[in-house]
Image (cartoon, rainbow, N blue to C red; front, top):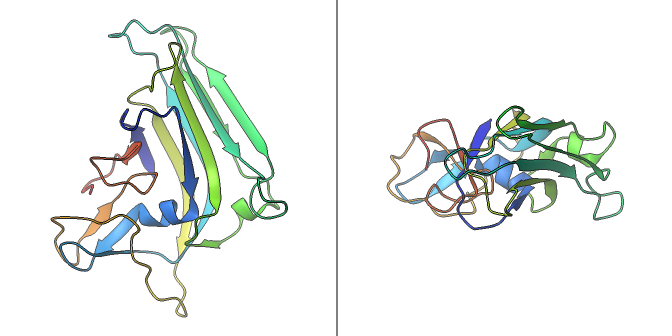
Length: 185
């Protein structure tokens, strides 16, 4: 999945849950109700890239990825990485896999457990717009799991159509990072 930051929300970081990841690819049941297309998700790798804004005369941008281990033995292994750009010459680039034996690297159902945290900030501590985020995921379904409803309400969807949601579970007008795939909602 590929996402692009919008600058909405004013925060230079976002916490992504497994529910957010499963909400990012959905099917509309009605114009206002939708369901996760898949039941389980596994994070393979996260990559983030950014350039400073030439229009705003920003000198650098810093990006980062973390698989936090906030709950002992629960999800991440506490590994993290970050990188900063050097003007317009070198983009900020960071990529990270979850630790092999951490729960972040295993199949996860829809839950509010933290999958990973992303950071992106301009040198003046503003939120950069246009940061590209690639989240390499594996999805699967299970016959014993009923489709889960999407956590954020939709509007104007065509029943039966597939849509792509934001990385943080927010809808298009309110998401920190929108999907670059269409149709978005």
